[in-house]
Length: 357
View 1 (spheres, helix red, strand yellow):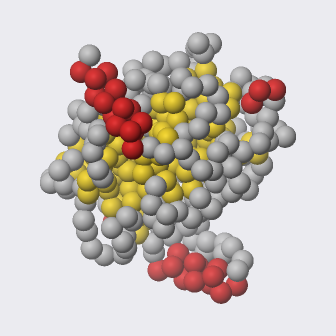
View 2 (cartoon, helix red, strand yellow):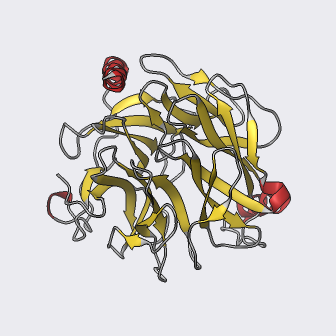
């Protein structure tokens, strides 16, 4: 009952402060089926207007709404706002605005970024300069959690089940990557990474009040890029994606919440990214090119290891950033047709072993 009351208060506060989003829904994409359905059973939740890109869906604790990031200029481009979409208002409803600052970016993580009592965790440059971790408590204003120096950014925050801790990634560009970006700006052509990608990301945890900041994984020291950590429902484990220096391949890893017990979850070559947990903690949902796919699709894998199960089957589209609904029945994700980065829409599909409603 307590969780339901907190969620109700948060949604009520959102209704009081939110304005109708000006972007509205885009016209249906030619690749969509009748009424926004796909042949694999996925159904359209929201498609923005123009170049806006709806990304990173995360269910509310009661499963009645979806939090997401709306990028104004395209996929991962331009200012970014936090929106909330009610699933009770029908497909393609107009989302409410949680936070929208025209020249700033506020970005949530798929998975456990919305806690019933702590609120919504997100990364933002709203204070100017580098990205920091922030929390939007129910009925309140954004509260800054971290403040740090240097040239790194704090991104992708995820709540522990009790709401007391937040795990996040620290991203720092290597000298090679900086030079590549400078070269890209000069030539206006994308630069091919000389070493397979030079960024080295570390994982940290911090208390919600900003105290107790602890590094769990040191990316530069281990020569690895570690990203998108998500806390398990029991609070005992973390799942995240990792890439070795000089490699283009991402793999999923699991470790204990104190940074011990590191083990690899996925095997084989490919892009295995965007992991988050099923509500019972027995499975991990993720985006992957497993089996030689040209474009990533959604998969699920047992949290203790095993054979991945393919969830989406739409070879002509990129499907990524999945989140499992609290009742275990749905998986929400972002999707766009084709291989290149394009504005994404939000979809959902019945979870493995279910038939939806």
